[in-house]
Length: 165
Image (cartoon, rainbow, N blue to C red; front, top):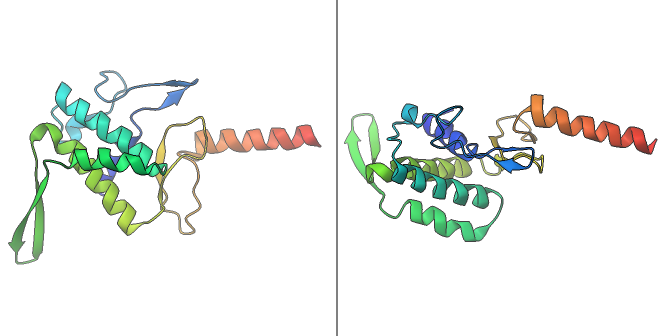
């Protein structure tokens, strides 16, 4: 997984739901998403841009076509500049520093959607607010984590079948 795919998942999964309450991990000191590892500044304006991009990305992945305006807004100031080298063309993102992580997140979403259509999805647990990139061969992964949501949902199905029997 590339660094920007790691960034994309970190951003998408920065608003988990526990006991029906959505937490905000972007910018949180304890247990928060460490943006420094992705070159983040940690400023309030960077966090605002990243939260807007995250919310638009989450809605877009869930099929809300109106979210595309939010994604376009995250890229409004972005320019990709080519650098021709012996080994090919390298593209450099030129964007204000405060908007860099938001733009990188949206560009990573676009690359994943293009290279692995339908593999970036929300967890199948309706009580969860996490996302996954399905890298399984058959493309049938449903849960953000088999240990948590997958186990929980399978236990519920088993209990429901046992009650019906």
